Length: 140
Picture 1: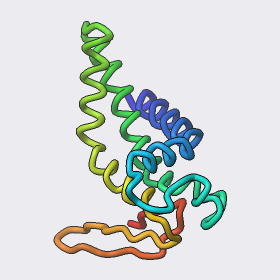
Picture 2: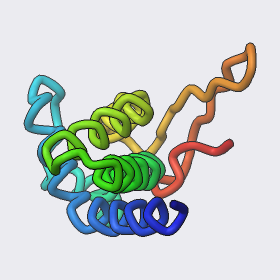
Picture 3: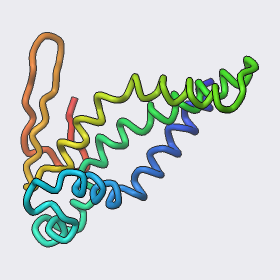
């Protein structure tokens, strides 16, 4: 059980980190109403490492998402379901659990300055974290 979760999670982090600049480009093109959000602008104004902005939260999301997906898929396969049903259950379960992190990731990726403002909910209060490094967008 835990081996499947760890393998899926680690593979997810590796894959997401490799394609992070392409993901940034995709998010920017989907939101072209925001000025100065091209890869060239990010590179010129913020530097090369900011092509991976949002990757911290993306990795935090990818690990459980892919781990849960891998685990549920294999669990369903062991219980006699076919590939299609097993994949559907795995994907639906993992997205249901990790989808709120997608909203945070998109918000961080669309910011056009060096300051990343993220709201962190703890218990009954909301804390605002500003000036968070681009590789660690959320501090808990």
